[in-house]
Length: 245
Image (tube, rainbow, N blue to C red; front, side, top):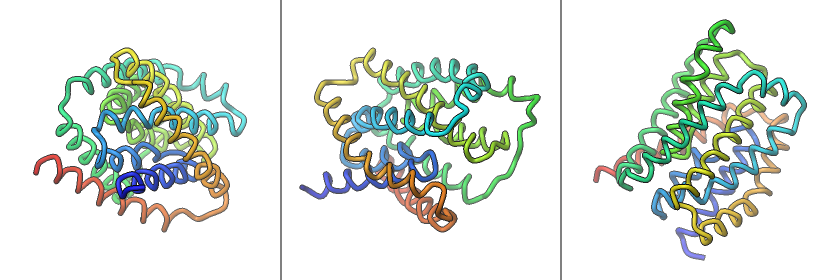
């Protein structure tokens, strides 16, 4: 196994574990690392199927899914439309610009988390904010494979408890990723070879994802999250340098 293949495997395992442990982070970590060795569109397509499987497991792992569906259905519909729009942009954007977008997004993600922004959305405003948040997250996900930042911030701002937060995040990602899978098929980005690699990535990541689920309710994640953010910052800066260099 060469160095690129080994680092790609490590990225999938690390991202799968973090996804299981905190409910999100799989595409945020795995996509930019794979994009260091693969064409960005290829990296995005390969990682769609693992995300669908992991989010499906997290969405049904604890009870309460029907209530989550009733609460966020408008956000899901807008997210589907945004995902198709974002994928259409993905088809037309150059690889260098994609690297710049991914790197800038990671730096923004780290900056928001380090700043420890704390804000709350009153429940009376949820019906008005869900459509634009869903649309924006879908477009961002279609372009970069990382729709999580606006959704994480939004659900956190709604003041959800841990179980509801993880379930809402997981099912939102599940809807977005199924829409993304349909869109990459429509735009002829998914080949049988890439589908095989996506299945392989899913199989390799399931064990690490399972360990992450076991960690979710037991381990203090403060120090762990700081290490992850530092890692993401380094990758984001490297991608930006690579894109503009």
